[in-house]
Length: 408
Image 1 (cartoon, helix red, strand yellow):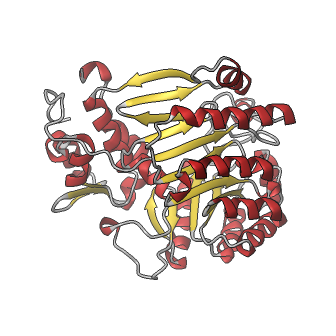
Image 2 (spheres, helix red, strand yellow):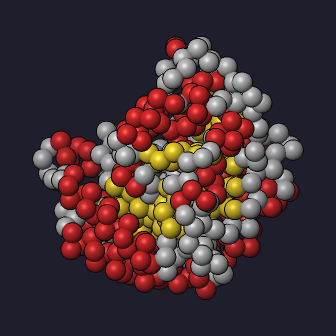
């Protein structure tokens, strides 16, 4: 960082419209790679969860109007239609169903025509479906409960139910995944022609079965060179198919068919909720383990569904289990790192509006080093990573993080 002494913002900070994240902690079976808080449900716990979630909405100020809503998990599509109808009624009464984008994550094995109909009726307009692979053996390796045939069935069901914005999640560098298997999945999945793809490299998170299998020598990690080649093959397939990369792992289409240069904007089909995260906007959060960021305070809810329900329903208390107040400079560094995950990078005026700091002044030395290494590109009023830099965005982002002790 080029100016350690600038601890406070020099400019006013704007508060753009924010998002709402809702965590649904239920899974029919926890995937071997997943480190998110989730567990198998029973009918009693599921009902109490919905009761508590609805009651928790009262914590949020009455004039809050989310720009985006995102139900993640876990597997939100495990909730039955009646539960979705209850949630939709409460959200409608609060005026939240006027959100520009309302996304629900789904597992292909947990969708039904009735459930899809109810989701559409209450205002959900975007579905994110976890496919991960079209290879049956690899799906089993990951601990997924769906089959390749259920992917096609669920996709057709969503289309026939009127959903015009669908995202499909994929994973690469799965243990046992060869280049041939990866290419086969790509060939099959792009035939569905969704508006959006998200594609992630497998990460071995501690305290997951997949990590334990790796440590025990039961699976072999895909070599870095092979994983890098898989990523390049995916980028080429996206480019040829008309999907535009707008973030490291996210690709979307423009409905008008016009391809835009990386620095000029994101495609129409981009996930607007995730852009809130990457661009430093605020977001409220509901549900067990859900994290929010409002008025400079990061909150996290209780990561235990039973305790969460008991706290909200029986004790009438707040489910917030912890709060962090980031110093302005630390938050500015965090926002800088996340924003560089996007192909657009940072417009200096937008960064100033979001943080109160000058990107050019604060990160001059970092920009120069990245340009010298052909990892970054400086524009007239912008800075972004190159295609090569995007591959190392996580490591690059660490250069922008500021120790809280140094920023006070």
